[in-house]
Length: 144
Ligand SMILES: [Zn+2]
Image (cartoon, rainbow, N blue to C red; front, side, top):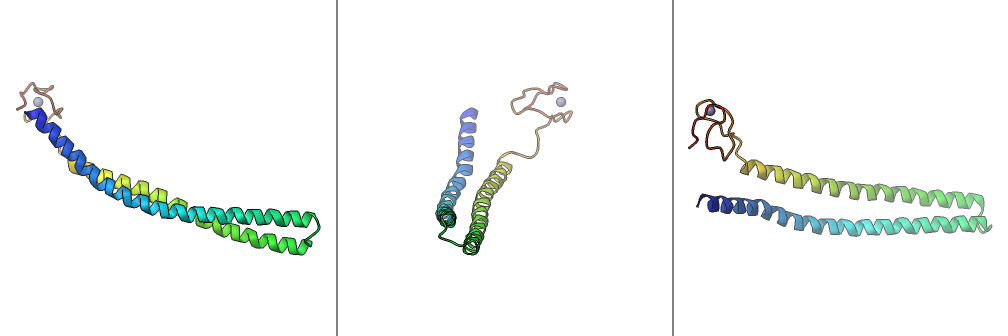
């Protein structure tokens, strides 16, 4: 009987911990898919800029662009690239770190609720005991 009660208690504890985590994970997945879209868009813009710069380089090498035009156009595009780079790092950095931190925080909070903080000790000599100890390993007192 005792064992069944323990299993039921353990199962309900697991469900109690897992449920809010699962619901939270779903909303975070929705958030991260929006982030994903923004990232894709930025990465696309970035590759378009890279293509344009390569085109400019080609035009310059084939004599279609003057040195002055080429340099000013390239530096303009590179500025845009730096700006997009910063936004990509911002989006990528925040979301994953926050996700991990939030989950870790949640798990440690739930663990503190379940695991009793007070250790089990012998009533006679105060030596710490294991949960399934029947006698104290130090003084031999029977554990009830
Ligand atoms: Zn003892």
